[in-house]
Image 1 (cartoon, rainbow, N blue to C red):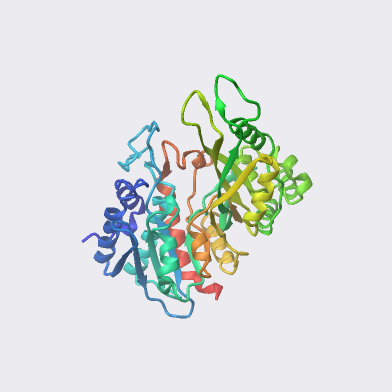
Image 2: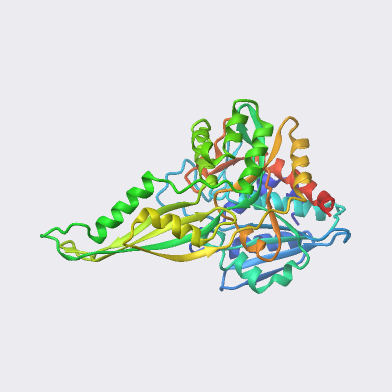
Length: 440
């Protein structure tokens, strides 16, 4: 029996990375089966629930004292593809080199799953005092929209999460070096998916006689407009919470730049002073619309009368597809027809009751550091749990070396994580399992 692996969370991550769970197609069954068998060795029963054959989700539960509502630990084991990427070390070997564990999913998010699983198994092995039940939910399909994973469970099996108020999941708790300070942003809110199809129509004909203002030209103008003119600035409460947290933790002049981010008229100028974090922060003050696919025409000598552009739109918290179509429509032109392809409602105003406890854990684990709220520019499975009343905190702590740029490897080649960061996170989450009752 292998009932000491919780003491070696980095080794646990290596084992998870060796399962190729690239989505599509996913193939999560073997990886989730490994987790099921590991839980069984610790004496923890679990159940597999699937919407699509071969795409299981796992649920396991530890019993607490009942003095607090159950706490959910949720994370996915599918990963994005590596095709076309050049890796220094094989992406599915889970190798350790110079203190770093290399592999697709090391950060997003098998590293997080290893952290949660190690803490969960430790709680079982040490018979830890838990203020409430702890539910472990290992999910499939997050990287392709979550339809077979979190969305399915929240819509069809919400009984599994009865009474849950808070969840721990991705994406936050990692260390970030800003103006000489170490910050640990804890995700409390995120943007919303708002995918669109924009259709352009115009005159067609024989390409030997070029026509002015065709559908192709209209699409090209729209793409150029989106590149040159960002959508309007909106400062949401979630962004204000994040920026004010950064401002309180940082020295001047960085603090002043974050305060300016909370004023719409000053926000873009403030971004100019916030390199290298501008790429992360800029999407948090406006809705975004990024053209990703364009299709039109079927023959080289025929001018198409219709061109279709797929646009990845992301809405700020509290905003709606109506806001997006209005803002996008002003840029793409009167001839464009905008269709909403998918809108996943986001999280409501965050329930911050557990936040002080999580922040305190991080500050105790890394004295001198500061925790801050985080608005995430992407989306996670938190959006589905939010629809059944569960507040997710992105709290999978990882303490990185000051010069380690993990952002550049997420979904890219050479994704990797320091082995020590996984141990740091497992210890922090184990403390959260013992202390989440404080929020009650």
